[in-house]
Image 1: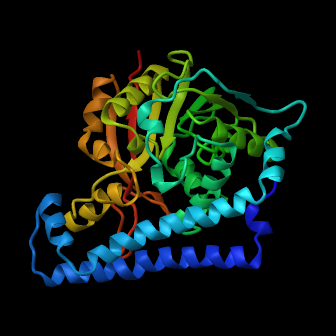
Image 2: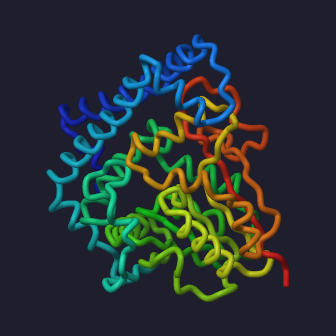
Length: 358
């Protein structure tokens, strides 16, 4: 399939490189300077609220906030222009699947998308991810820059599959909730070659792209348009239910309902694994993460942090519930913590649980 980045003009490439460079300097230069400025105040904040109050009074904080939001808007402008100028060719790709596909695509035109999903331009992406077939290509392209090119080749998601998911030589079914354009689903067939791999998402554009790219690379994956809270998949049929970067985009009630649905799908002895965020215990660090919700149009960030997911999993009948830090650069699951990282980064973590044996 056409990789847009291989066709960029010199001007487009320059624009991409500028946004990428701006994002890197925001993370590895502006953020450390902000921490230094905070430290010079002598503030001994012990809560996120206290740290936020000090943070908002720092001269550098408006620039830190502004740069994050502005470079995100620039990212979508660059990605959108590159995609839309190639609309015809990209549209053709979505329907150019083999006559005898290895996997399947089931769309539900009658699926009612929840208001909390449609009412916001999440990540500041105009029209969000569900509005048009091209929006999936825009998000796929933009996500590479958001991850500072550290997820090219889906390294991030491959690390998650290798280090966070259980070894199951005889697995029969794996479900990925909130699979988007398939980045989190694609490593799963290699991890579980004996299993049916199913990717579930609300957005038809993302599923079309996921299916086309899976077929182009010879992967057997079944994609279904459904709500992660009511997938329609048989109870007790899955060895693993997983999801990456999806719970923080739901209100608290939907997070709970998704966990309950995952528990329903699991076989006795089956495993739940969600890659999400957790607070670090560093008030300043956590304040900058907490306020990312406003800076990046992610209105339910606070719902994730306000939900006791260990308790939610327990109420859903799951056991052995835990959070473990995750290093997206090279180590994957990292029980000892994120290490000494001066740059701004997301505090990724894995929520793990087990459905008890009958």
